[in-house]
Length: 446
Ligand code: GLN
Image 1 (cartoon, rainbow, N blue to C red):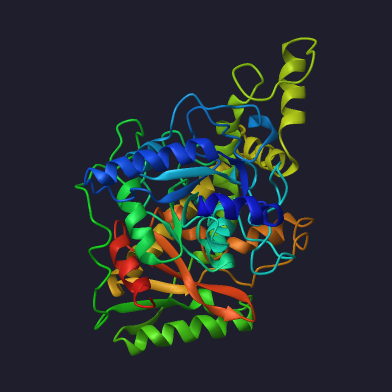
Image 2 (cartoon, rainbow, N blue to C red):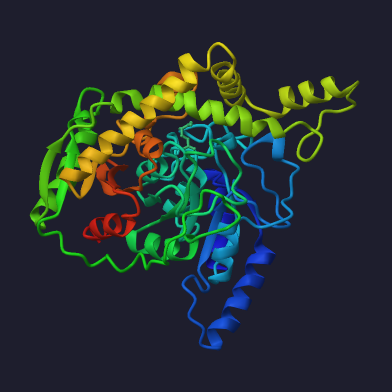
């Protein structure tokens, strides 16, 4: 009731929710009460949460921030939703996001932009900007996000919260609307590393319904929270501290790194020589996969359908012309182009080779260090509208986060400090399946 009241009172200014489900939430809270009374101990029992509107929720609109799916009510729950509900979570509703998770500012949403709770003239980051803003404004203690190129970590940084992008394959993608399937990964967003660890305990695990889900023994992500930093080798990629990094972001990042050094960690300069290629490689691979994934929105099976189609071609073309926003169309066109005969080798195949080089850089780095650290974003949260006219400028918002997705590694952003009232994030990158260690480092600040 407390959180629903806050959503009701404050979200008109922030616009972080696209759907609020108060009756279902109160019923779930009652059910959680009954389970508690019986002495049950599920990890999220009675915890209010919000689901990014990319996760299918049975009987509730699942829009993915798009006019195309505005009329879509999912007939089933995503695995993440199912697992969190089983763990006792009380879902308050669905959070706003960039259309089909394409964006870094939450301005491409069909439902209007989300505002940063720390400064309403600024963006909350994206694409999981609704989840980040809702957690930052204390409208909900925890929310889910998805991260294809930075969409959990960048909004977490901009809103001053913690967000974890798990190792690819750790969290099931079943029922999570696909953008770029080889990069997409769901994860937790909450105030602290400890809260994220608890959420991840509920979210992660093998799922036979996702062919890329990894079968591993269950892990308790809170186990490493109290780890000692003595002797931990933290690599600082020199490419993440070069030109283009705002000086105030650099200062706050360096101050946070000094705290880790004080606690006994050893800071080592490393190099990820191909990281400069990550944005161009991503903007070939991600649009290619998106153009294929978004082919399913044809006005026939579900979602938006144009009025009075003349014939099948008219149905397809008008449905897609009217249902998708400008950024989504741009990606579909680029993706179709790089996959087409004659261009495939020059763009798509080349990007896949670069992707391997980027993963190799990380492999070599992790022979030297245990964790990699640096800024999450090159700049402070920017003003609404500041980058919307220039897609390339917008794409550079993810310059430090994208390589992690191309390699499939786990990454996290945690609050490092502030510049005025604006939050700055510290990014921690780990080796495959080393989320617990990242959470342990982040927990040192609490
Ligand atoms: N901003 C990046 C993009 O627009 C990443 C988005 C994401 O991680 N979903 O593609």
